[in-house]
Amino acid sequence: TPIRLSQITLFRVLISTIIIFCISVSTNGPGQLFDLIWNPIFQILALAMGLVYYLELINWFYAVKYVDVSVASSITTPWPVVTVFLAILFLDEPVKNYQIATLVIVCISVYGILWAGERKRKTVLVTARN
Image (cartoon, rainbow, N blue to C red; front, side):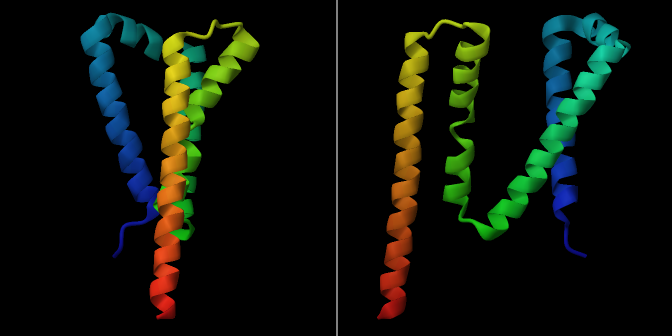
């Protein structure tokens, strides 16, 4: 039987959880982690974050079925930039030079991905006509 999208997503989330668990234990020690495990607020937030991540991955895999990967990637690439803008707007965070440089790099990269995808699409259309 073929592997379903929900199975791929579950394994991605599971692998991410294992990696984050190992990093957390190695940097903070097991004591702090096990204290958080019994904290009900942490449990609710962790469950909500896991659910949002799972749903995001499911949507990603469905989107890639219908949209070129370069276009789908260019949609998700700017999210860290959006996060910086939200932090500036709501948390009054100062803007650092490296954040501005990163914004420029992300914008150039997204433009490059979209340009390359459009160029590829036009090449395919011209080839199909001939």
